[in-house]
Image (cartoon, rainbow, N blue to C red; front, top):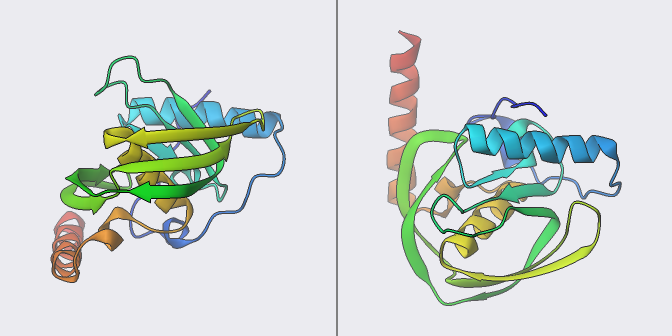
Length: 170
């Protein structure tokens, strides 16, 4: 296992829809293990494969730092099949460090996916897990959490990001 470099905004791979996983080979198993280690080292509650530079529909989630006894979840080729209700909460992203904002997302979701061995998996979630699932599946579709903000908040983010980038270059 190895900690991989987390790709940062505005890298192009973060904006591209990832490819479906077809083979559950040793290479995929190593990627999964590396992603888990990377997520814990960051530290974060979720990580999508494109955040470590790999265009595959693969995400890992572990919300146990906030909710005791929550299991580590590995999702291959995940799809949200149901969204219900609405929830507002603060959200951040490992690919956009030091930036959080309050976002609206579905309160409850159902997700179909495959586990790390290719076996079908179905999850129902609400609260933080529902939010994490939506966030990571968005990543796999080339959508960042800043894309879900209002136009005004997004413009503010872009200006702040550009200003911070200029300051870090000096």
